[in-house]
Length: 346
Image (tube, rainbow, N blue to C red; front, side):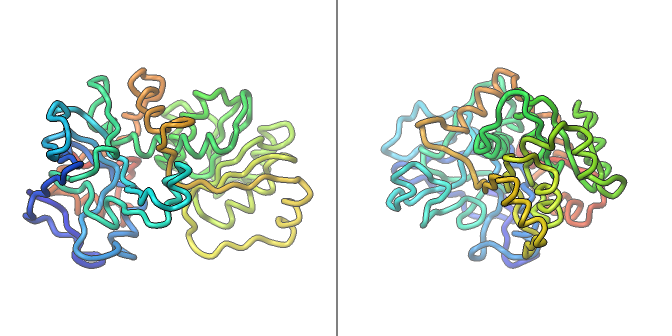
């Protein structure tokens, strides 16, 4: 098969590799679409994967092409997204169904071969099936949609809450879409990239702020009565966290979603505000995939199949697998505006 193989940091090669063969309880998935995640850029160009060579990519969907000998052949032809985390099922977190916190997990696209290829082998358990109401490109958006849903659900958001989202990239916009579904009173987006904010406005989000042009703390306070009920910090920037602490209301919640850009420090004054306001600060990681109390992937599929959650409008670029490097360099060098870049296998 053809695949984009990372041989060393910065060296992604489009080449022929052996098509994987499913084990007894595994399936072979013909990949039809795989999204480029923001984490793929540093993984390919800065940090590398856990070993070389590795095929990156973890936001994928496709068709079951073949199954292992222990599985039912009727699975062949079914459409599915792939939950990329393969848990050990032995640690205390796995026993509780918190697979995102597994102590000895495998992961498609970073620890084992992922979705920037024509085929991938995964355990049957990792398949999240969807019907023909969704395109394969939408199916590949189930992973980021579930990450956004997980973050919002952790906050305990209530009806009519005012929510601020720092970062108007794909995840931030998906959080905004979920917040609208969950009944937020006002959804405010903060970003230093004016193109992202205009893209958000075109999607129907009117309350936007660029801290380069206006004091975001003052703006948030002017848009709310007591400050924001809830703030999602999706940039990983320390300055955004400080602004969140200052602009959230007393007894409000700040959820940390963005991977840190570097060491994070806060001033003595902002530290004091956390105490005085009695703030709740939470972290969010991955998604909840266990059946009970709610599988967030299945929740995303239901919302997307019913058209309650629309995700296709976030896809700004579609590229063939062979042209992935062109798209990655566009993202790395910011030569064009993009939201979600999708790799397509015909």
